[in-house]
Length: 308
Image (cartoon, rainbow, N blue to C red; front, side, top):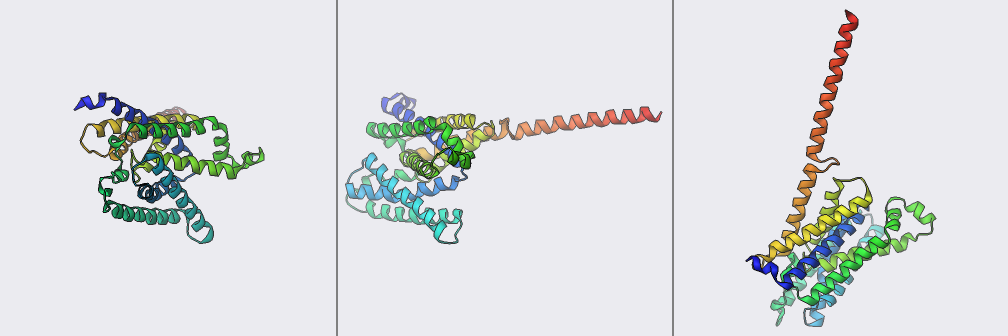
């Protein structure tokens, strides 16, 4: 059973999902500070119709074409979210929920139709729901890895600009940084990260790979730079460990195992993180309580000394 992890294809898949986790961790930090974690979930679900339509029009399973279809569908979902917010009194979270539900429902409907066509039930499109890294071929691995590295490069090369964009948009605009183009670039890299991970993690669970790593990293540091680095590490660990576990079973979906691995990292951070970790806070509370008791004892001894 363990020999499957030594195969060349499995190792390539492990490397690609690790790089995907790193990319998701870095982009997840941007979404975290923009308070748009739900946006990633909405866009992930909105990408499903594009995947199914790309397969239907092409007639075969080509990951690169499906990624393009998913990206178009996700960007269309992002457009509708913005339009609903600006044209109606609907709040942002409600707009995201509406788009998420409608697009995902449309995707499931199209998936049902395609699966009933000749050869559709053998297409493996169901793996895009919960993810199935084992179904990836070498070309899929190269495509996902290349695009994930591009996402990481965009974040690293413009790290200073991203900091200004997230924390001081007014100052950034004063320096000549176009907030419109930064918004477009942010949406583009977020969508790219989502669509390249939907085969490995699935449209339902890819959002967890964008949300859990930055939240976990937040328990360890107050520095944005270190938060991005730690989030990338957590994402990489979750991607590789979850994929390795799913590869050991026959037909085990990858997405749930990646999410469980990320959740395990979060629990460790929640308990032991030096920034408001539960255990650390408990120890700090006990230390402060002892300090207060000592101060009270000193005050009592001083009062008795003065009274005598």
